[in-house]
Amino acid sequence: MSLKIIADLCTGCSACEPECPNEAISEKKNLFIIDPDKCTECEGDYDTPQCVAVCPVDHCILPLAA
Amino acid sequence: MQSAAASYVSLDALKSNRNALAEPVEAPAHAGCGTSGGEGKASCGTSDGPDDMPADVWNKVKNHPCYSEEAHHHYARMHVAVAPACNIQCNYCNRKYDCSNESRPGVVSQKLTPEQAVKKVVAVASEIPQMTVLGIAGPGDSLASPKKTFETFRMLQEQAPDIKLCLSTNGLALPALVDEICKYNIDHVTITINMVDPEVGAKIYPWIFWDHRRVTGVEAATILHQQQMLGLEMLTARGVLTKINSVLIPGINDEHLIEVNREVKKRGAFLHNIMPLISEAEHGTVFGLTGQRGPTAQELKAVQDACMGGANLMRHCRQCRADAVGLLGEDRSEEFTLDKIEEMEVVYDLDRRRSYQDRVEAERQAQHAAKVEALAATQDAGAADGIKVLVAVATTGGGRVNQHFGHADEFQIFEVSAGEALFVGHRRVDLFCQGGYGEDEKLPSIVTAINDCHAVLVSKIGACPRDELKTAGIEPVDNYVDEFIEKAALSWFADYTGRVARGETVHQARGDASIRQGAFTAAA
Image (cartoon, rainbow over all chains, first blue to last red; front, side, top):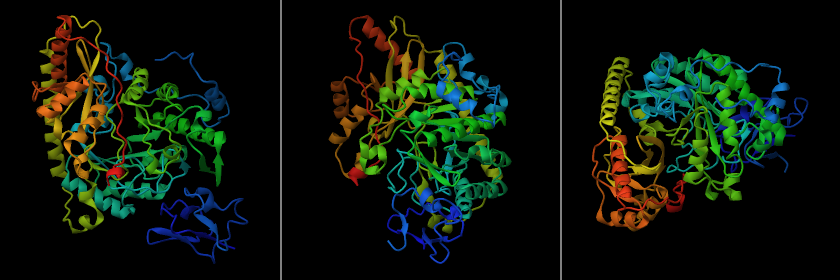
């Protein structure tokens, strides 16, 4: 299970990066990406995925399978 | 002071739930200079001089363009965009949109790392020695990226110790970071406060990110409000000067801002800046998309006037971008892109900056003295019959009427009555030359921008716009060239009321004016 950031929607604001409990988010070419191997969708840490909760753009971060 | 009887149920209820600071802090000595000024002086603070406030406060504001109306003609500021992340969502903000022609908060062309930001500041400070203030204003919230913000401040304190540091925040993370702020000798903090009633707040803020979850509605606005008030009180208690920015949103918080003014004043806010909502559909903000309009010039002025006597009002804000460079109202950021800084040979010469600033200060003082002298010699209007009018002024600076009508991209607005000419704001007008429009199209937009004025004072004006202005009922005035603005305005006013008294002119009220919105995208 993992989330992904839709590059077309990402503003590169970096709000998600420090919120990730797994350090799965990093910057790439001024945008941000999620390492699917590290992402747990915050299960076990928080009730909701932190990156989704803090992201200013609706539907920018979605489940990888979707 | 306003009557204490007018307190707010919502706020009291909130305060009783708050543990962190049970008693409101006492307002410090510097607060409220405006109310004791005598001689009917309405707007203190931004236009005040050393006689109006304690020396330590004067030293903090005298060369800060945002805190002193007079200083903003002489000293420059810059913002560095190191803090792109935000912890709240505002209905008037959309961070996705960027246009290099656009001047509004939250917009930025290039985000910087702290290292890049410091390099840029040092380069600008060498090139523009009157640049005295460095602010971090986003483009998100400066305290939502505390590591980047404070790392920038830390490095700057080492490399450019003479530059004043300030920051701007929505206040959500403020209480937790006040001690950190004080570590870096930050004298000035701006908090954007649009409400003191969470019911109002819920219409402005769809959500906040708080304690690892997204909080919405009244609950979100309640938390934000508590953090803002607590943060303001904590800063006041530590002697940090605070400026409160409020966005005037017609139908949502217009009259409510009078309550905001009262509450922030009570908590020691030094300055209150009430700004018009910038809202256009193409900005893609919630308000832009729902058709929420910004205020007209008179609506803005009415709320600002109603708040006089509260916290000192700032009237010279230009709502600049989070990467602006230069004097307020100008933006030289294009000269200092990362590529260009790379090629610059930068020598940070503290002595050179100091001596330059000494010259600027001497010039500022000389100008101030000359103005006081000129005003003392100005004749008072005789039978003004309580007439009060607005006049628009074209100026390139120096406090004088010295700009050609056709060269003005903004007009200063003064409210003139018998014996007093008061700066009450400015109006930007479109630079249609960019889009290849002719003068014919440009003029109507200028008329709508200053339509509430009885006269426009200029150094020169062409025959065509002169006739157009007259047709619109605005008197073009070009016989006070290079005169101090207040003196010119009062002299014109004496002449005008004389004509009214002799029956040569019929005094009529003017209509409203429109505030130009930020974007030039229609012409792009």
